[in-house]
Image (cartoon, rainbow, N blue to C red; front, top):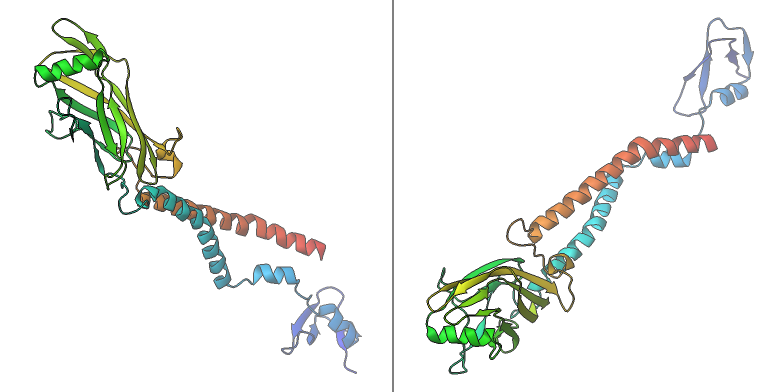
Length: 301
C-alpha cells in the first residue's frame, strides 16, 4: 500500500485530483509514514451544513423575488386604501366628484318657486360649496331692496325661515333640505346680523345625505337696505352619519385646497415608505441576523 508522510509541526494537505478525498501530505522534514486511510480522514474537509448552504448560496434571483413579493405585500394595503380614498369618485356617474361645485337652491319668498341661492357680490355668482374640501367660504350678500330687508327682519324674529335645498347628487332629482339661519337684533331702522355661519355636510359614497348651517357668535354686523353683509365660515364634510371627518375616513381624501394630498401623492408616499422599510429589513438581515444564524448553526453542528 501507498503511504502518506506524517510531520511533527507544519503539515499541509495538497489536493491531487477533483475528488475531495484525494490529498497528499507534504512537509519538511518528513519523519514517518501513516496509512492512506488516516491521511484521508485527517485532511478530508468537513461536509457543508445544509443550513449554511441555504444561507450562503441563495441565488440573487431568489432575493429579488423575495423583495418583489414583500413590496407587493406592502403595496396591497396602500392600493386598497387609495381605492377607499376615491370612494367619492366611485359612487356612480351621477355622484359628486372631489372638487365639484355644489350650488344652493332657495325658495322665493314672494312666489314660492325654487330659484337661485344668495348671490355673492364679489363674484356675481350663486353661493356654492366645493364638494369634498374642508375649507373656508366667504360671500358678501347685498341687501338689495326694502323687500329683502323686511324678509331678513322676519327671519331674525323667527316669523319666517329661509328655505333652501342642496342636490343629493348630479341628477338633481332628490334634494336635501337646507335652511339658512339668520341671527341678530332688530332695531327700528336697521338690524345687527351675526355674519358667522358653520356649514356641515354628511357624505356617503359621493352623495350628500345631510346638510345644515348654524350661526356662531362672532360679531354682529350693522345692516339695512343697501348694505353688504359679509357671510363667512368654515365648511366641514363628515363620513356618512358619523362625526368622523371625511378627510381621515378613507371615503374621500380631503384636507383642504392648501396642503392637500392627491391620490397620486399618497401612492408615492406609501410606495416610498414600503421601499425604505424593505431596504432596512434587508440590511438588518444581512448585517446582523444572517451572521448570528450562521454562528448558531456552526455551534449546534
